[in-house]
Image (tube, rainbow, N blue to C red; front, side, top):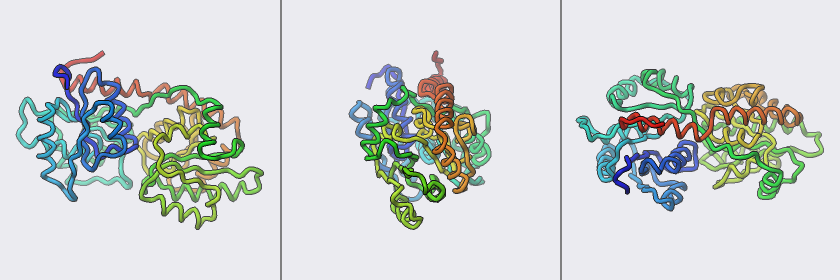
Length: 383
């Protein structure tokens, strides 16, 4: 690796196709002319690893053992020294914990500082006295903390005991690209084998309890019951995979809506499917700043999301999308019905949603924010 570039180590759970991992990969590719990036994965490599290796990045796994793996700190310390790492960028709390453990108790001038980025929060999110105390010991003067939104920052203050003045918000961002064309819509629908005139609602999310697919399916049962007399029945497309998928397929059968729900399974390029949708939905119990929500808005699609976490920073109710209470299937379904039946409302919300995205949530703004932080931690400024 070039000796004249500072080395940044991304430390993550895995390199799955999820928000934090996609953003870390994009950040490394965007800033590779200024920094050398290496990736350390605690719990296995994941599907993004091969692409990063093909692009010339070092990707290593550390094989974390169950429970608190105290030896992992030593293994990570050895890798940081071997790669002459200048800054550790830890994504989410567990990678931060092991990054702090790796540097030990005694610090010196060669010990790399940590940039800890919190991408989201568990639900329910509770304060732990032990963790608050641990954070006071783990965070050092040169370290930095970022949150992907204001909601996440407040959670770090309230439940992790980190001082607000230490936490900077760097919003998640994506490349908005151009609006999808009619040809993009037709290609996406052909790939999914969906007729051009069928109303489509799409949710792109891993099948995990925090995404609350059960409420999404109950909301869809409400939609189907209300729109049962329509000549063309609407379709719900659930894009993604995860441990809850089989249970949700059984629930769709129990709710007697199975013919109107399409489970795509794992998809490498989920963003390419979004043009097939008329409306995009996110039924989460908790969110940071959802990348899939941003991707829907970039495509000019109206969004319906739960009124939780960072969703309210992305979606302004009745301005850039519609919000429904967490776990309220009927309210979520009513929002979907309103958009399915009102093309003018879909067009208006899709247009203002994209404008909001371009103003606040672009990859360029996000990359510039992290580049500035890297420079600050290393002791030099960047334009």
